Length: 335
Image (cartoon, helix red, strand yellow):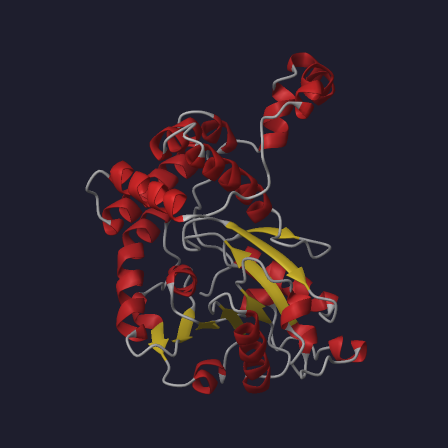
């Protein structure tokens, strides 16, 4: 049975340096998300030490970073940025021994997260902020075994972290507010677009919105109402183009013309009662599973995952460039 720390344990020692002065980052977990974080931090000019228990982790991580590097070069590398500034540690304790910030990206298993965050807390220098890339667990549920839960925060990225700017930052019940503030300022200095949440929300913000769309898409496939290709085209050729410039709320406000959102709600509000969405998830039976997998294979049209990654990266960079959001010089990163 785990012991839940008392609220007094939430008070952490001050971070050992300011967010702008961080030079060394530890990335714990080197899969798609952890590797993407490592690539991002390297491109921003940091020294990165990574650790992952998988026997092939080092080779896999270097392949992932090599694949991401062309996109990062287009985004613009910080002065001194180099893949040679990556070190892959043989042990977790070695990886965080001199870390000034820790990004944990282990698999989404609650017991694993609890144990790993407790180990990181024990091995990381006092006061150093430790962030989890969890995509669903609240930090309150993950920080229960740490001796100093006050420095544990969520830093939820979007795939791939080296390309998509957004990171959602939020603490748990035992997280010190100063740690949340420090993490937000660090991510900002590291070139991310930061949403600092003032409360925990299951699934955070963007995932909740993505999940609603995903569930409706699965219903449409399951019911034979649309194909995978039609669903994807309906977004990339439709509202996705608007969402790249402004979000769904302002997009709908514009639908109200000069009357804005008020006119839109007056005019279209009754449609909220129409049976347009089914937020309960459909049963993921074998038929639906096979239909979605086959549909994605058809949509890929023979392109490999590597081909699709490169295509996605080029597309996102083009959108960032076209909308004036392509990062310039990497100010604030390690010099």
